[in-house]
Image (cartoon, rainbow over all chains, first blue to last red; front, top):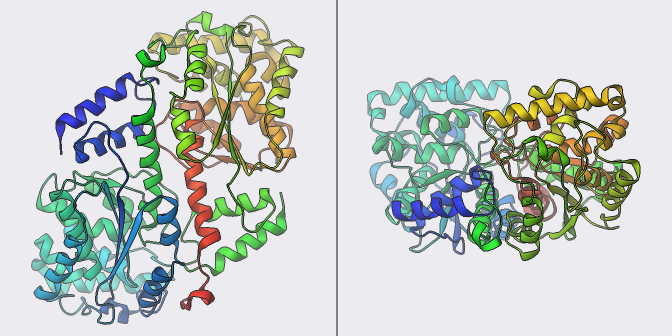
Length: 318
Length: 318
């Protein structure tokens, strides 16, 4: 990040016509955008919402309330403009790019084998990396993939410890039996891959999925290009978490858009030291929570860039 | 509210291409807007942000970090377009109307006498009532008035019990001594007005202020005109609270835009049974938290009105 820009933005916040600190997290957000855009007055003109979709072999274990073919059906719905993320991207003034990752070819069932072989994994990471355009003002991430909250739970357990029951939730709405199957699938994955999971990238390859690998690649790309990154829910958070395990400030450019209703997400954000902007009981995925939070960032910058200073407005500063 | 419209909106949410309930509080918000706009597909085309400003005699007691003249200076800043609410109203696509209420003539110091006489009080209520236009899709409330968190604390104590220390906070940023002076001012007001405060309207007249009375009038007007109402922070919440005390469903049309950093606000929302949309440590007033929440409502309606149904999209519904 650009410390000079962050300091200039902090100094600017102190002279705007409001009690110091009274815009709370809007002030923090403006300063973080300044740091990662490298300018005192950040902008949100080129906002890209990147959604990656993948299919999961673990769906054979009965871990989702929806059949596996819904992944392809929802990708078609994205193309037709009918999904929640289409509406939210439009409403927040963002460009939506949906990238399906070989959804006709599910990953391997990770309770028995690595989800991806190395070539497959690297292709997915590279696809995500390349999806981040130079010069974007903000990247907002999201995903679609029936079965992927089980992958996210397995990855979270691999990275932060605990068992299946500590990380699984109802996802799109499984019943109690489905919830047990999810926990069992995670535990089976932890047993199957053992020590190999202690390497964060290897954990992502073995128990993740293509859309998770792509989100990881996009997060890494945004970091290298110094573009602020807005995170969505549990699956997105788990996918980018290896960055935080690989380097202490690996997610310094990230803002948690929201905390979802999936219980593992709140725990994951605590592990990552990220405080979400929104907490609206959402659990849809598709980048929907992050995309909604773009509006909050726009509000933060509207104030940061547009407000008068005490001197400009002739207001006593207390 | 219109129960038929609410039921039609609820039925619509159930067939949109997402797991049932997965948009969480966005679904609730869309249904509440449907109920109060009286149509299955609500709109937010005519959104009015109404800001009322007033001056307070209690400022003589040293209850604010800012001098009393800042009220008039900030009203000038609103007119010039330099305040936070100007930027946020523009960003959220709302029409901003600022109504100063005789700010050159402060209310009486309510630790010693009623803040307003009856004529004064009714004029302020009527001004707020008349500020709500027929046919608006949403009214978003806010205020400006140095000293008014002390009035809000006194009003909250009058309506819900407790002493000054239970309801005061640092407002625009008073130090510990200022915080004690606020608590003492509230206690003095409770002692001075005694039993008269058991009538909610009388409490508003005696320990409120003109901008609080106007927000009350606007909330009542929105209720009668069946326009959904978006609430801002502690002062706004206290001002409209008498409606909830006068009738059980007096605030059924209200949505809490945010919970502010002023500690009394969270308590007040709990008393009112309202769950805030946003929790961003904001404590600026000016309707800023509510105005930011307009974006959340826009996102909710973008999904509600724009998403494809399972049948339309050919997606399996689980």
